[in-house]
Image (cartoon, rainbow, N blue to C red; front, side):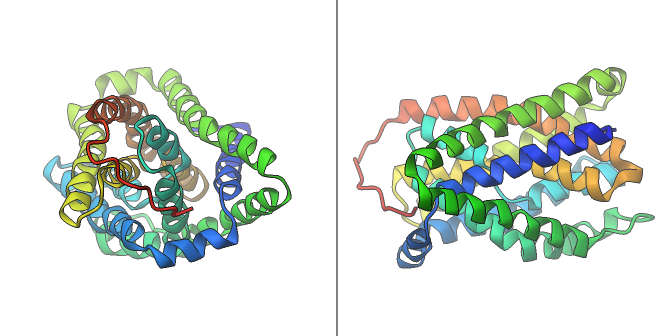
Length: 293
């Protein structure tokens, strides 16, 4: 369980992450998305189409306890985060598409995440009421730092770049911090945890990478865009999931934090491996990148 000071630190870090996201944007970027929507639409289908389905299937097949299954579905329904933007940059993908996908999925999550939880998580919530309205309100509040970031971008492009870089690094620091705190306090629990928890966490990310790339390739996106959708799909906003759990599921926080913590640790490893693989792929066709953002 996170202490009040740690919850406050988590909220501050999520704020910084969303601030950095906004610092990459200007109003014209949204018009560019509507002019060239294919990449973002494929990403939307990946993020809110099969990721929650994958999470649900894994929860059922691996026979996870209800609260753990609920946290897995929450993770699958969470939008992407700025950490994926950083991995996209390292993999030589389309950073502009990655940022556009992150922003659009975060905005859409205000409606989509409560809807997907109602659709896929109801059977796992016996004895626990899912606060759909609170989750939607929390996601809506996250748009405030995005707008502040956009205002910083308007005032100074130099400061916007600094804020964006800080936010990207913070995304990794948040995951490492939360996983570290949880690991230290729950060493015995983690050591005695069934392998199914680790399998679920690892497979959620890997399936996201594979299906995101496959869908992009089948729908005719270029190689840079395929890599981007792959990473954006597989790397969920773990800190946001943990934040929602900490703020809205206090009575079951210890149980529900377990799987997102394992995911936070393993996704850094699998995303690093995916990034190394994508860098070695090179750019076979030297496509011109669409300016999504």
